[in-house]
Image (tube, rainbow, N blue to C red; front, side, top):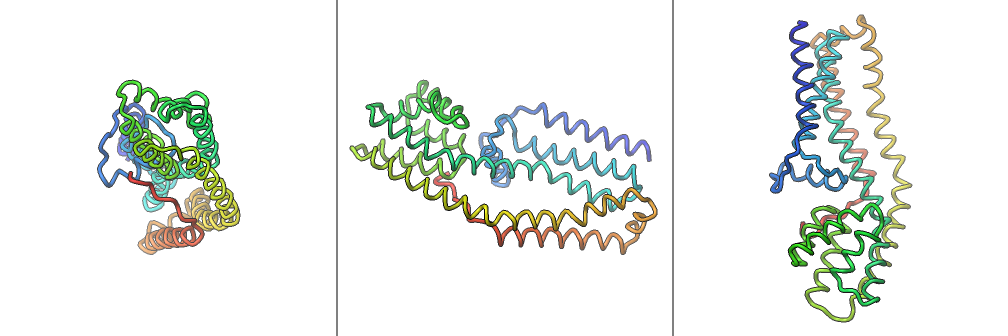
Length: 284
């Protein structure tokens, strides 16, 4: 048994090392990885690949399951906590992506105002976008600086905008980019008015959404607390071997399975009831 546990811990360590040292990128993600790829981009985690997140999840699950088995000698409980921890990396990526989207919603009106001021001062649209790489809001300087580098190298505005959209991976950013693409292709003198109207719209939308998110925050927090409570209690029971042995029996396994299913379904239903609609990406 000691050899098996040592092997599991060794596999977990190797998987973690692979996740940390893997620097390959996926320029054409498969459909089943696309949602994870977009979540990583929206979270602003440059250099992190979907494969790295998946490998880290598997490694953490194996290590935690092996550790719980060493403490409790109860495989159903060990597998349950291994699965719970295995989902943490993906959950953290999605949480970071949601937090960054909320942060960018506050910033986008300032970005549009900067563009409007630059255009009114006589700068061309590509130069105005490139200027955001040095004088724009701090969280967005890097994507716009890379846009400036792309445009200097290739000189193709539309292709540089496509790469900017991929780096931003933000619904509001998509709308702004597509508006600028149309304005650049069609031309005309209404670009300043378009940008001012867009800025006012974004500010109104951000204000209304912030009020709604504040009111529905208790729903999400209640859902998390309700789901975490029983599993925290089970973790505490794991410290007493006499209490945890009951989960070795078929009835105990059934209780764990039913509890896991009920927890997932109840959490998803409560979060769905309290969730605000998210903007879809435009032409992504």
